[in-house]
Length: 521
Image (cartoon, rainbow, N blue to C red; front, side):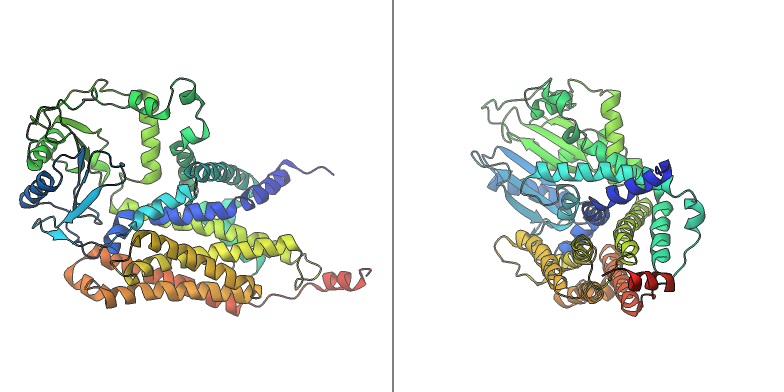
């Protein structure tokens, strides 16, 4: 008998959700953390204060430093404090012949202007990049993998809606302790609870990687991708160095010009090409802290005169503006505190949806195994991948945070060793659970993750002066909220480990036991 359309959609939902499911889980897990990447940056750089304002005194100190140590550089770059934390006043410069990534960098106190010794870390930015680059050796292949997984996610969402004809009714039926039924209820609930978010975040995620999926319009019309971006960007004519020495206007004056042009909004970054030359150009990018900040293009100033440089094409087409809106919706850069928490919680629900869907695949099929104690290879493979990804990846993130506090500040390539620690911790848990019975593996992996997360606030309090109690006393809610969130995650993992430990599988029905006994050898 032919399958009905709904049965076909159920089959499609099962397999299109399983095969890329582990990639989708990683994308959701790390992407959810990335909604607070600036706050994570602030926690991972405890030497910096949480203040978001920069004084004229500090700008003058940065200006003096650049003119003295960055004299003769091809470019200067200034990063101003972010309102969400995570950055001080950072100045850097690139000498002639240096690679664009090989820059000298110094961080200053945004109030006093004194130099600060800040630990090397990739902070929340690594978590942000991990969710769409996957830390592949080849960024291109990492993004191809994420694109394929996102397309599968979109198909899984649509086929899931078709499959569950009572999906909204089932959403209100959370039956605990019912084995497979409980897992299905949890999967349905997490799928429906944030369904608009799941659709939006998946579709807009595909839009952000549009040119990875469909590069032919660019390759068919432009010699390189850089040529396309230059043609589509709102920018002035590129100015070559004139060779005429001319002092660059002070940073404070550039910041004041930007604030006047943007209605008192602050710049986030300043990049000056050919400083000290008559043709020096300053490019200022605005900070984006909430919806009211809107979307503004970079402001171009003549760095020798302080005047605005007009753009060649001040207006962009509808397609470009639409893509920018899609990117904003996906990243939540415009979101204020309340909306950003909504994004974060919806991301956690999406992560749980992926985890429960992967777990449900094993739960459903375990009851149909002739001998559950001796499953076939494919079942064992899926089960072990589930444990390694679902329980191992969060534990790896906890190790990443612990490494930030425990690795020596003077360690060479310290930031890379923080990242390596994440994968070492994740891999160690994965390898350990391969040699353990499935239930014990789940309990031990989840319990280890809970213990590691619980250690993060404790180690923070022991190694810095910004522990939870002290942060609350000072009103430093960025650091305090991070520690409290980490403690909540530890409690959630501990509770899950406890539930798995106490779970007792139900005996098979009598009819099924008779069938197994009467089956021919």
